[in-house]
Length: 227
Figure 1: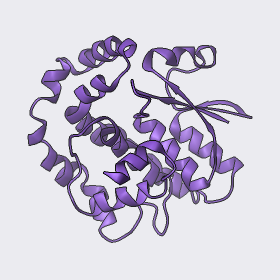
Figure 2 (figure 1 turned 60 degrees about the horizontal axis):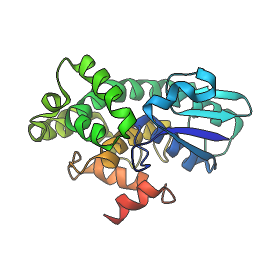
Figure 3 (figure 1 turned 90 degrees about the vertical axis):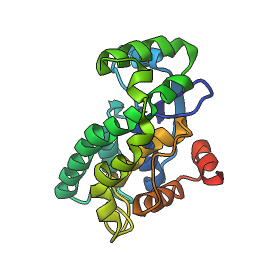
């Protein structure tokens, strides 16, 4: 198998969606080759079959979308299931919806310029143009004042996870499931591309470190654990 992953100028893999899949692979004990790509290379993957990464090249063909990759790997590798029944899958869909809207948007307002700075030169124009169109302002304007948004991000945006993790080790219950992969991958985004501290001490930060300790073979994780 081969996993196509978004990378920056120095090879750091920073996509929140790709890191969701990386944690899936760690939980299930599956090894796969990594194929780092930049934003402008994504249309070339598998003759333009998809528009996003991660993309998993497997015996079944090319699988796009991190959720679909997780479902596929659960189906073909029964050990350490990520979805314990359809109720768990529905729960993970809810977590994904929250992460892809409230959490991602909150993080973007604090690190989007850092993401741009970490990109390969050939990807910077695409990223800046597309994001400034989306935000209706420059990256600099969108990120300005981020220091004033950290407290609210932790106290309000992350409140559902903080409350759940105050009484349990994992969002999945007694062990991590795909809900943990979703939030972990999302929070890896700022940790890989930015020096700006987005997590405050508490249950979520403690949980994030437990997630890192599942993935000690990854270069980006080694760097975070050493810091």
